[in-house]
Image (tube, rainbow, N blue to C red; front, side, top):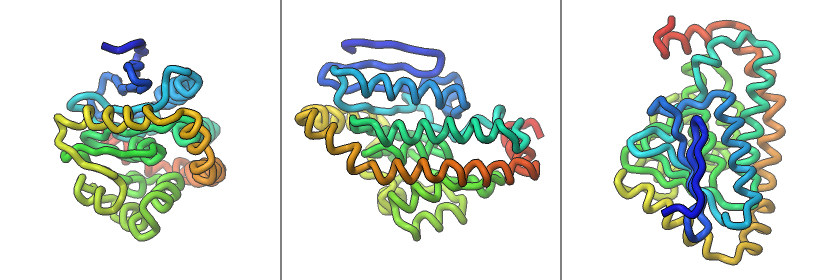
Length: 259
């Protein structure tokens, strides 16, 4: 039984015995798209958990038989026109990524189904990425018609330049075995074992001396987080340009059946 539990409209959080906080994305849509509001909600939740003395490690999980995250919410983003709303969106994205990567406590991503765009980028901010054998990783920004500043930076930092270029320019799905071989995942397990394995890894991390772990993570992740913040302004310029053309919105509307 959880020691403490809480829920919001699109997130569930349980602080389990042993110092592990399980954050489950419980948005109604099984693919777990991330609107600006959901990104702000997750940013605040992760920040709050970092400040709790009874939490030593976090697990981010899309839920049973649900995708980890299917990218941005096209219902929202397809209405962008290349103005200030783009800057606000990029600010929300940057705040989320820099918070997940920058807190003092390690974060484990338990990935089932799809991790696409924003969803994959959230996972790339985590210390460990454990995927189910059914997981699929995709960075399809070019196919949708938008820039991929954050994705390019993250992929190169995590998996190297060649994998980054291949993933960005192909827009293909990476299967779990391929993602494991390319170091995008550190471990692959059967879908029914995913959550248990992620919690097992998190409990091991939580068993270490907190002062040692929590003084180390911000230092080793510091350059990565600073890079994310530098990408912020590049992302604003690139996405303003892409959305001002209008093609991206048309492609997104077709994806959600509105075009």
